[in-house]
Length: 197
Length: 197
DNA sequence: GTTTTAAAACCGACCGGTTGGTAAACTTTG
DNA sequence: CAAAGTTTACCAACCGGTCGGTTTTAAAAC
Image 1 (tube, rainbow over the protein chains, first blue to last red):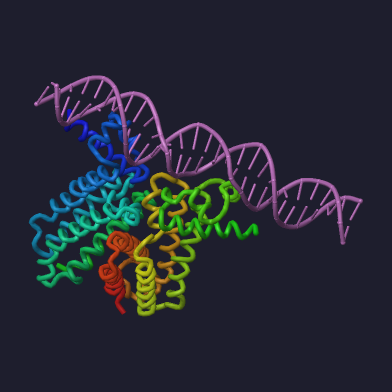
Image 2: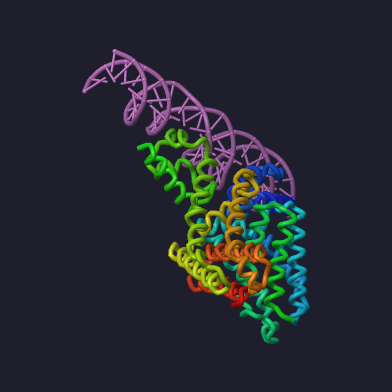
């Protein structure tokens, strides 16, 4: 039972935090939806921030880093890296479109909502962005050494992440499948231009 | 006096909404800081959403569209448009750096916080993003007709906006002047690559 | 040019409801 | 039996919004 309740809290909190945001997702709602008592919640987590941190790190691992790594695994030259990035963009678009562009990226949501107010969460997010960046740089460096990357790897990685976040934001606002498709296509086109194979 | 209080409310609400976000900025705080009574506030605005709409539209006009237009005015070919965009990026970076990367872009903040919860605000934001996009397209079209734009104008405009929003997000998270400078530089480099003069 | 009058501006107490979090009691488990 | 897990009841602080009533303003009537 012990694992069960914590697991159910994390699961429910994940969904709620993703769709409602930090302030929007209340502990009351989480425990009600998870079928747990409030006291039970605070027995496992000292405060709201604690579960948000756990949820966020879990989210980044399963929704960003792992899928991206799955596509990039084994990509060692310009062409394979390019294809991998393209496929990841495609898959990511598919996932967001399927959810009706609701939620967007939890990391980006928290970044804009909490970065100015929560130093600890901001620190975690800094690390996460850096992880993401480093992951990309690891695969981009060989491409750069081939001389086929038109930008410094780290610079390209940051711009790639930034553009992805921006496009996700616009998807959330427009919630339009046609438009969203073209926007993600623009990111793909960017990759196309910056990696010449 | 009548104009005075409304003006003070808008002014104070702007600052608070920019720094604290939609949920974070409470009417109580706004009226306290503005030196107005709560009843006075609700005499002028039917609800919270109303002032947020006014503040947002005012923000976009004065902080985004007008400055961008100021730089782009008179830019009619590849080189002048490129320089104008570069200068705007530079100016925008300076503004954010000066604020210690606090606040970021109010439009982006509201987009991620409210797009899923507030249909009316989402509609307004849709229009705003379209305005921004059209403004850029207006200046980019001649460049495309010169054959010097490597992307379809609208696609480039969207990607430009998205990347700008993403970089602003990362600035807010990292709050690092060196890093922020390089990130905005990456956006400039992107413009550099996509417009050849 | 003073008085009347009515609307607009403004006030602060108050409303029901929600928030994150706590305390103490009870239940299960080792 | 003790420790961990779980529940119920509760808290002060705060939220957006409403209320009846007071002050300020400005046009109309004299």
